Length: 144
Ligand code: FES
Ligand code: FES
Image (cartoon, rainbow, N blue to C red; front, top):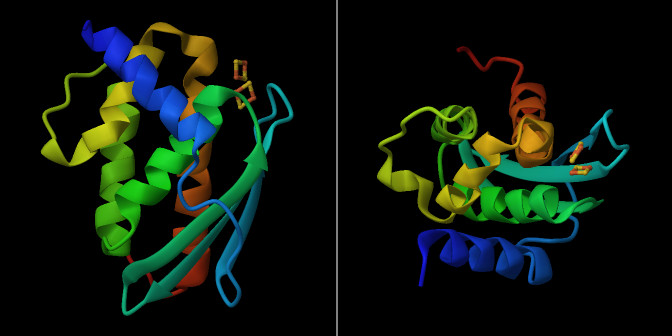
């Protein structure tokens, strides 16, 4: 099986069986819209002692955006907020087509082909943008 076919299957799996879909109570909530297409995502994140305890998303969007959101929630659960933000930086670098050597990327690597389609970059990064907002709005004392 070709690597690209494997990646395609990982993306479709996350799109068809999204992980961590739904809503949380008492969590930070962020609504974000991709201005290019109007697709929207709602991200909710529960943070305890600087750790992402739980994270859920809802939304409607293309397969790339929804698969990316599903992958993101899986990847950041259990990380500290700072680790999650750093992972987001790694992910964006990969999407920009940069060489990334990070074992932590896991399923996220399936989206690396997006770097060849600039119009899809926003689709792939929408959920990560929502994560950034949630992280920065939940903790006023957060220092970068
Ligand atoms: Fe154009 Fe996603 S915004 S393909
Ligand atoms: Fe709208 Fe991809 S086309 S998020």
